[in-house]
Length: 343
Length: 294
Image 1 (cartoon, rainbow over the protein chains, first blue to last red):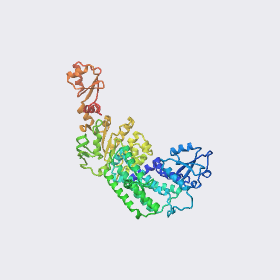
Image 2 (cartoon, rainbow over the protein chains, first blue to last red):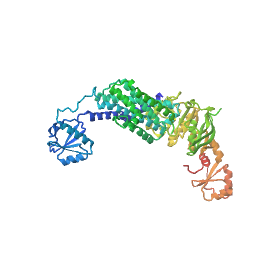
Image 3 (cartoon, chains in turn red, blue):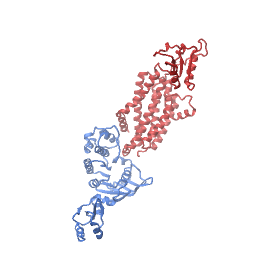
Image 4 (tube, chains in turn cyan, brown):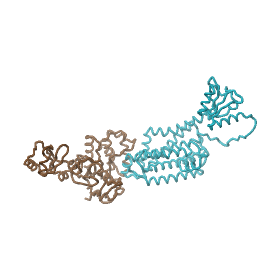
């Protein structure tokens, strides 16, 4: 078992391209999102302003209502005349078109655009006389959680999913197809030993890349981990085991790489979108949430976020951990039973 | 001495295809047995059932008089027809990896020497030539010092030099007293290496014996060939069996002198006659026919 473990590890680190990709991919995603969401110049709505003859114009120079200029998340785009602005508005390149120097301000929106509706309300709100208290603002108590802090466990989870499903599932199927498994069957090696070696090797790879990516990203963004690192490691360990078991189950039969690739995609894409990697499913239809609950990735990411963002201990995520471990046992049992060395 | 392997009424069906049709034979200790047959005759299926890689539909395989236990895997070595090797390992590392899978193992340096792997022992598995690969697979089959060695078409796809080289290795292994079972469709390979030949076709054993016995039994003492013009009516008249092919007429006979006399008496023109000793290929073609197999 040990030698298969070593052989698989060697194969992994000598496959330089694969290694680089495994480490670089999650890193790039995190850095990419950090740059997009971390910077100040992130505009949610684009407001066209005309007539502005000489570019560039800073917002301060625009002859538009002062308090509207100060609304956050707006970007002002200058246009020479009305026709140009209207054309952009029609094609949803901007959300609202404003004529400078008019009082009361003259504006156009596209009736078909929900963003236009929002910006219109923003504009009207900005025009309201100050002093009148219509609503009382209360701050959200506690340390703020950056979007990136929320996103990071999801990205790590997604990376683990791809790494395990493809690194285990695809590789085993390829070995069955080209006869490596057949050659191994001719030795005293047992299926259980072989699969365990594969799983352990992948687990090592997972933790290695996890640590490297973590350190790399931490240097740039300095993540805040509310809970303990040990608890987080336990969560990722359970999740990793579970995903590896799923990979082994998918690889227990079959010799067609194309077919396996299809199945892996079929499983990993919904898992990626429904396991709250990128966005929360809050407010999604109940059946979508129910489907998401089937995926092990959902539980791992939920648990990781609880530990990282909310400072939960292992006791508070025990439900997720139990689900993950149960899933692991089920997949391994079925996978070992179905496993075939031959074509 | 009891046979090392006893095969009893072996049957293997794949869905509706009968690949092995109720065959029984023994493999004596220390012999080199060749399974010979056209493509699709059931050689590989048979050898893989004996190896324990695939299971038989019915029938049994006995090793040393008993059904095969876990120890069987420790005592056999297999060279498959087509297997890839673990990627990103060097030749030496591959040998080391496989060595660790067995309870007992041969010395790696000795194997590298025996199979002439020295020049590329540090090269990656996927960067070696066909002949080198085949020798590496042979070394892997020998790594646990097996008592019984299976070679499935060991020299298919090799050039003549590489083939001779491989044969030398097999012969040296033979002198160490190991039992060898090999499949092949090269007649000269079987003739050169095997003491005992089993000819299979359509999943059945159709002949068995040493090469010279088979030739004697099925093709007589000599083969005479003639150009086709004029000779066929004479042969028909004399009631001699003949075979046509490759633009020649071929007759297998027991005794050259009497045959030549009969033909001359019958007025045949023997000026373009060629006499040669029949070989295993003649036996093979006689028994399995000349038509191309799909």
